[in-house]
Image (cartoon, rainbow, N blue to C red; front, side):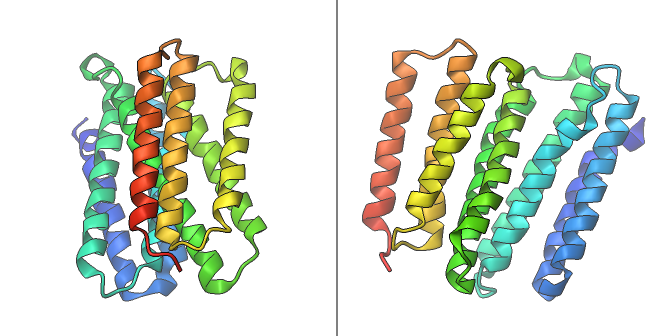
Length: 255
């Protein structure tokens, strides 16, 4: 149906409108989160209900809801005078959500036209952004509001479980046989988050540092569980982590 084909565009525009509303009223944050998330879930429920491929609409809903919510939280902490940065983030969120809903449309309703691996590939980068937005936002809230670190770590743990679960699911990894690895990776990230919380760095830098750790650890574990891990990949990701973290910490503003 033509209506189903238009839903990815409608979902993206609806998300953009919700984001733009935040510029005029921060008090609308909760309403935007609830309404946009409900709209996103409703679209994916409609797709799954009509699909002969997969009826698990809630699994498809994890990525857009977490991504949009984390982006709203992060953007709400930015200064309003960062107009161009905020608009860039609005555009980035809108485009990524459009492609995700578009891939879901093809996967669920037109599987013959779906390009294998599209949802999986997009999930890698969107979940990285979701993790960064969440980590930076929680560190920022801790700094601005002087909140205890433990509730923030708990919030980050929940998001970590969701994004890692979603990526493993999208990668078609058997979660029943990888529960131990799943738990270990989440525990390592939470320990890293706790350690980074004591660093005297800007919350953007701390969040990005933790996001780099997330990306490397999850990527290596994902390759391992897919039986595709080799020395070259290990060397690449460890080098990437070393260079990225060194650049971040050497150029960061220490508070």
